Image (cartoon, rainbow, N blue to C red; front, side, top):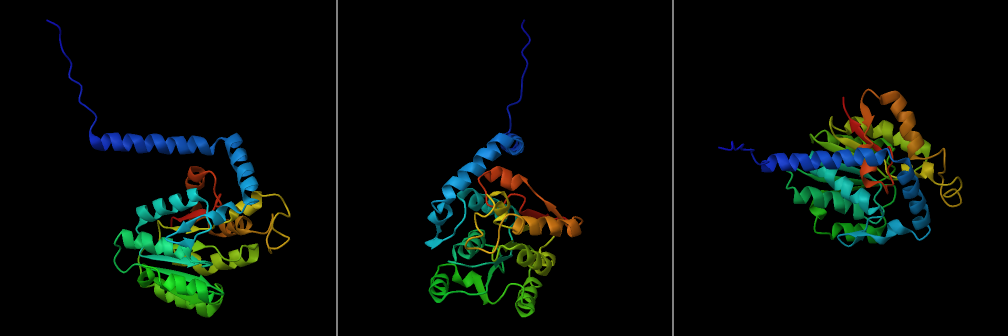
Length: 259
């Protein structure tokens, strides 16, 4: 008589975990592919000539981000369930509406998105305040590094337990470094501080300097490196997320608070 062997089928939870592990390993390998990263950067430079990042809206408002960064950011938010998202830099309002809509969708108690900008133009304010997630947004007009503005945000942060910060205003080294000094302690342990536009460091020198006060050597990436020299005990650069997006404005700009 032939002996039959019974092999258990893979459970649903094991299959889900296996898929996640395989995908994460693929991201790690992709992050090691320097040729692919170079091609991605060349594509970004070529596409930027057509203002590619201006092509996308979130709930009707311009968000001015690469699609991959939008998806990655929602993954982080889904994992963290932040009850406070501090957005420094409001512009057209797409990003604060995105953050507030994620909180609303996850039905997070006491959730709030705070948008800070030195100037919130009236037409943008009207659109933000008329959005369907306006009740989850608080706008503060003023310099992000003004002590009175920082104190307002700090008071709000003290009322929340899972705080995430996104610094996306003036991209010059000194300004971003000052913002890092003002806001890093508001980030809750296990959460993230995100620095968009670190990609400036990897674009050709002089690409932005004709009409912007930042360039290679003077941008969020250089500020991030200076910050990490002092705060590597509190934060770690989590390259997984930028490697996952690959075409990303945020290389080395996802900072996870670990202490």
